[in-house]
Length: 371
Ligand code: GTP
Ligand code: MG
Image 1 (cartoon, rainbow, N blue to C red):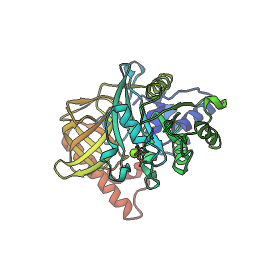
Image 2 (cartoon, rainbow, N blue to C red):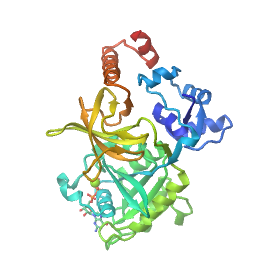
Image 3 (cartoon, rainbow, N blue to C red):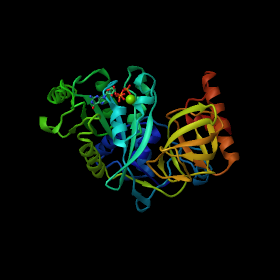
Image 4 (cartoon, rainbow, N blue to C red):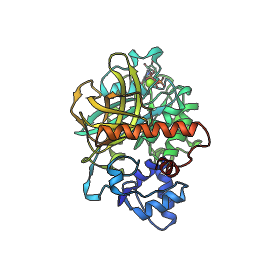
């Protein structure tokens, strides 16, 4: 690989893109999230952040044995929809807002009205697509909120106007800040008698979220999932924010991305909901995700329809996995079934050795042990 974008490099290292940008700045290089770094710079940054770097030949990368960046050239990148994660305290109306935006009704199907997984949906506004990830607000689901924040370009922080800033509101702010993603505040339940949006704005100040009317730069929108007030404005604000970010991806080539959630389904076997971040995923592709692989038997979009392929920023269900991958695993398409077996068996072995104690400590050591 000759080059990699700032975002991809950060993703690969599971680091925050802001940290990569900060380090680049310290070295006198002003960079944005989609800017492309050459291999030398990328290696330097990775080393600075304490990662072991092993350059491999392109042939090795082709074979999918290494989790290494694909080399996207600037001219190969085309605009992609923003991925927007909805975060906030339990019951503040995240799923209801998303239902209202989609004109669907997910809340009523949830056990006790509590979201327990990440839902992924795509909507269209003014001819532009937006991908939404819903996250749970219950305190038990910290890891899912963290994962949601990492997979996203923009976070919508939902705060109920009758309740104000609560513990998981604060936690969500921390996740969004840690992931370096811009926040849009949706002050929800504005239809209620007790609604006090200015109290929300003031409380947010204490957590360093400065909305415009308080002299800051964070955009806030008053909304009601019940009456649909403010929803258009919220979507327009998302598109405005997305425009500033200049989000791009390469739509050609083998797909890669992130496993959002995965489960064992009685009728359908192991099912993974993935977010494609680069390339195009097709039915028939051979996909490796963590220690599991699939020959993609079917792709199902957020509307429950079978589709033949999925482009960057698209959430899609993948059927055909050998076992259930982990939420948060990266996935990538490989050339052959034999290669998929080799990679996943290798990873399973590496994990076994590691958990057996005294095993390999870095990818490089693992590779050496394999020879
Ligand atoms: P978790 O996923 O469990 O964190 O909850 P959530 O944030 O998704 O909240 P949910 O959408 O399930 O809504 C919680 C309750 O608030 C439900 O009873 C909704 O009907 C109600 N609600 C949500 N939005 C509004 C609103 O704008 N106005 C009013 N009046 N009620 C709302
Ligand atoms: Mg919910």
